[in-house]
Every structure is written in C-alpha cells, then in structure tokens.
Length: 310
Image (spheres, one colour):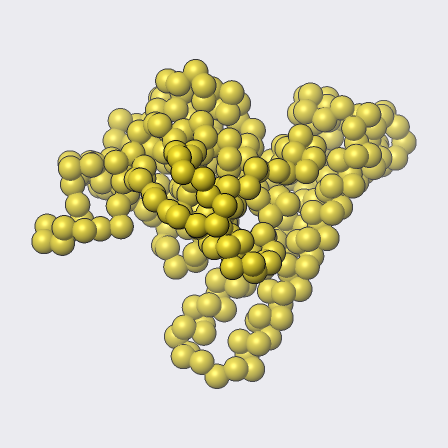
C-alpha cells in the first residue's frame, strides 16, 4: 500500500472493504470509507472521510454535495446527480461496485490522468476521472424526442433496450435503470430509514451480545427513526429479509448445480468460491435484519419489559 502511494503515477488507491464497501486513499494521506447496503434491489451508499486529514475525492468542497456527506446511506441517483460534474463523477457508486465481480482482487489503483498502465496501447478502459467518465452518448429510438438529456450510466442501456424490445425483466437483475422513465422508488423515505438502521446494526455486535441497547436506541436509533414509525419500518425490514432469503435459496441451488455439472475445474472452483462468499454475506445480513426486526417490534418504549429482555 505505502509503496503504491509513493509512486509518481498514483492518484488513488482503493482497497476492498467487506462485500459492498471500500476504503479510498490518496497520495496526500487523505482517506474515506464507502459502505453500501443492497436494499430493495438498490445500493444505498455512505461516504465518510477522515475530517482530520481531508476528503480524497474532494466532494466536501461542493456545498451541493455536503448533504450527502452526513455519513448515512443515500441512493445511487443522488450520488450520480450530485457528483456528475466533479473530478471523480459517481465515484462513491463506482468504487463500491468495482470489487463486486469477485475476481477483481483486493486493491484497485487509479493513476493520474497523464499516466497509463501501458506505453504502447493508446486505448484503454479509462479511469475514474471526469475526462474518462463523462462522455457523449447519442441514440435514436422509440419515443425519444430530439434534445439533450440528463446524465446516465452505461448499465442504464440494458433496461432501455429491454423496453424497446418489449421484454419484461426483473429490475433486481440489473444495475441500471431506464434513463427515460422517471425514477420512482416507492416508500423511498422509509427505505432510507431501513438503510440507516442496517448501517447502525452492522457496526454493532449482534443483539445477543450487545451491551447497552438502551444507549444505542437513544443515541443512534431514535434520532433516525421515531418510535411512532417503528411499525411501518418493520414491514419493510421483513420484506427485505424475505428478499434476501430468496437470494440465499438461489445461491444454494447454484452451489448444488455446480457440484453436479462438469465444467472447467478451475473456473468452476473459482465461481464456487465467489458464490460461497456472497452466500455468507447474505446469511449474516439476514441475522442483522432479524435483530432490527426485534428492536422495532419490542422497543417502542426502551424501558418496556420486552425491550429490556432482548
């Protein structure tokens, strides 16, 4: 790590953090943590930089982005729309997803704009800088009126083409959204509270080992979710737990299928390890949601017998 940061060509070094997160380092000692939670088939991501050292992506310089720097998770649309004109457009989402493939290793190196990894090859896949990320995209198709449109991501092309072809598909199977359909996330305000609760409980010991639940309730949970909202949020938490249980079932089925089918042994073993890692993450996250459910069900009153018995 230190050797990479000392290289003249280095701009940023990004290190994998868990399943859906990363840590960003720059050459001036600035660091930031990106933590994401896949809720309702959408990534809710937070960005926290070390205030004593500074912000490696430079987002804190823009007053329009500051509301997103509260340390809590926000939607992909919020991050894209707020950062699309920055030096590192959509950096929070891009750097949270770079390790998702499972074959991406543990460290991602971003060079300065004037440097490349190869001296001969003139074309590359680009990087995180604005000149690479913000490119013109021209299209013509059904019901698209002539004009300029807002910023979109490359994965948004997939659901757009499905719409043109009249093919229906589960939106949970795509990272993108049709850029010509108004973004709608039913109950977004309440889903945001689910994301905040998962963040709070992920950073705490399991409920059975947690000492001082009363303090956590008063200092962290009640400021984000009022006791009068507990019932509505509980419904969403249970809905999300059911979704993740279905994912666990599919992943278990995939593992069984890999054991029965004859494939390239190297590829098969690699894919199996990636599936096991993902399975482990979702199983653990379901336990976290179970803890959240218990608190929402029994702790409207922190002094109540049921809450104190958790």
